[in-house]
Length: 138
Image (cartoon, rainbow, N blue to C red):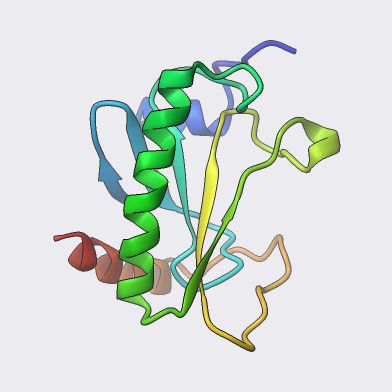
């Protein structure tokens, strides 16, 4: 399978679709998931094309993982979380829905299950959560 430059995350990187940006560096971009499974659920993506980890370069993977770690600390601090779940899916059979490499970063608390997938967030709530994460990064 080939990378599709018209995928939604590529459009976010080109500023064609609005998003709640949390962090960016030379190699990665982080934004809130609009269908969060937990408060503070965010996505880490490389700025360069990669369909998933199976075709990503070692440099793309290293940059993403470094940012995933940074965001894991930030969401735990922002939400007083006890842990963090990191998810990454590859190809449709592996659960991937958007075919641009991405990592889900979800703050977690003991006994609080993740919400079911597919429910759109209230954008005011999402912005408030993003503000907490940005403050934790500062």
